[in-house]
Length: 359
Image (cartoon, rainbow, N blue to C red; front, side, top):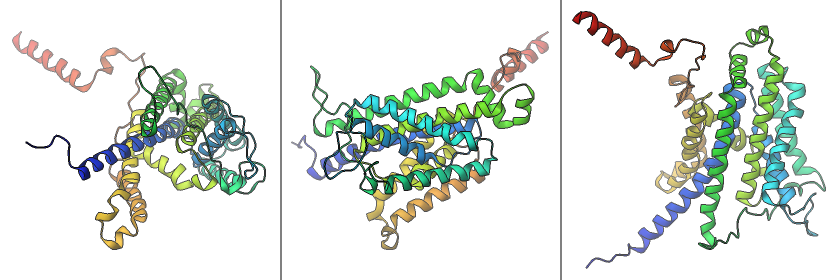
């Protein structure tokens, strides 16, 4: 009789694969929130935000300051209010919106390339301040002991213990991704969202019908900054410890841009799909390090960056609209017959010809 229990190496491999998959999907959900925010700013509005990591970092640090315990004699940071984690998330979102307002007031009137340079500069300045300022965020040592949301959850049915908490994290991140998607979708499907598309496609025409384009651009920039700050707050409580070196431009900015480009700018579902595809390459390539030749295995992180760059170039050349292109938006004032899909039009045409031939 064959044993019911699988061999130990196979069981260990399966458990490890499940644990990695849960952690991977949790991270992808958080980056999906970032991709949605960038898609709102760039995909719908045309705002070139190359300082995503600044909003990500501000949200993370703000939530950490509000929720961690008071600093010990070996630590040097402000705050330590030990507030509930949801309050920290709210504070992170507000901080991201305030930062967007501060950056947007002097820069949103600039040309797109100058705006991109300005946002990169702000991100570098904030990272330098966090790493070198006394009595602020513990300098380069970072902030540790950031509490986990629902870490000690107890219900009449189950108690969260040990590795079980990774499933709670996945549920939290997925729920916040779904809420962010609902908010962004509702905003972009409204008349306000149609103004953003018009602003992106032709700013002069939008101004000619009486729309204050800078004001609308600021609104989208602030809302996107708030969502990025929320993502940073969730990330801080997911990893438990943050520092200035945790928020690099490659990880916090250009990876998110890649997700939106690959998924499809102007499409919220595409942004989430791009986060999944790019995340699978970014976090999955190191897993095959042992299977690569020695000269590649020792440079697996360089291989990963090369693959991301190759992916961007391939999509820009062969499929610039991304995996899921932007949905065409047709005004409700257009006659309903003109909004039918091509197969409905074809079927209508065939029926008309059949009737004409039978007559």
